[in-house]
Length: 467
Image (cartoon, rainbow, N blue to C red):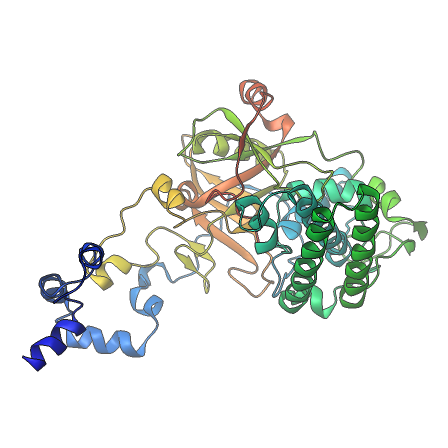
């Protein structure tokens, strides 16, 4: 009897317990369930041994797809230098800058090129996000600490991810500088420790601001204290990233590195106007493919912005066929595009190839993975995780896309010389966002994008920042 009781306890079987506890136990694993479950134990000892000693990806890899993919593209934009975001979540900025510097070179018939400083704009991004968090805490100070919106600010007070909209707002406000004027620092390329410390300080400051509101302090006093707190954040950022340059001398070069203009002194805003021209906001639409929601409707993501006084991310939800056609129109005109993907799915890092059959996990584990795109999004199984720059497309005889090419920000030694090639089938399943210049957008879609947006919550599975 003693051994039976021991076995029953191990298997989670209730022998004698209160009625309420027995009710809860109905959802547990009982002895009968366990007998059924264990019938699925692997019978192939060789496979078990192989999986115990090897990477799952190595065993599931489809070796027909390990070769370098076909890199010929009928429609391709001019190549430019490959950058490396290293151990940071700034892919959104790298992809955005790739588009801006390509547009600059195109306007000058490739006689001049420019490389923007990521460190400079990242500094202002971090300071603005700190202010967004602190002001958000003030705005929600009347709600309990466990309120969903209050927890939104305290859970992730600081991050280095974002979208193209962030660059549009930040560059117009603070300008841009060349990488020579403000190069990368250790913490810019390896952001985790800096972000952790900034987050800890912001949480502490947020609690103090909540208390000031609860104690009935005046709005002026609260604003003054928030300003002092941001001074602490500014000092921390200045030590880690370097204080933002206010003025610099610069001469433009061509693609061979030869100086082609006289040296001139610029402020960041003057350099922005010289290289970008007018405002970025208002010149583009952001398209999203979200099969869960109605197409040809616009949506706005609450609190998805980099600056408190900036723009929330607004997008129009479109079928992949429409997104592809806009991308093709842009690429045909030698214009690169900001785009984002769930790049971790089926990625062959060695060859820089994305295809739905790069890995056969189902056969390896004796099961299937049949969820469609909508189900994957709804269950947090898939979503936009990484921004890359769309640079090329190959079309079949009927004008349908066969494969795409993106410029990545993992260095020139990653993938295929810094690029990734993806099949159109993979593109349809795992592409999410595309930023398109309005001149490549059909009139009907442009009109639909101007309708009043439906507000959606930032906790939605799809609305995570690109990093």
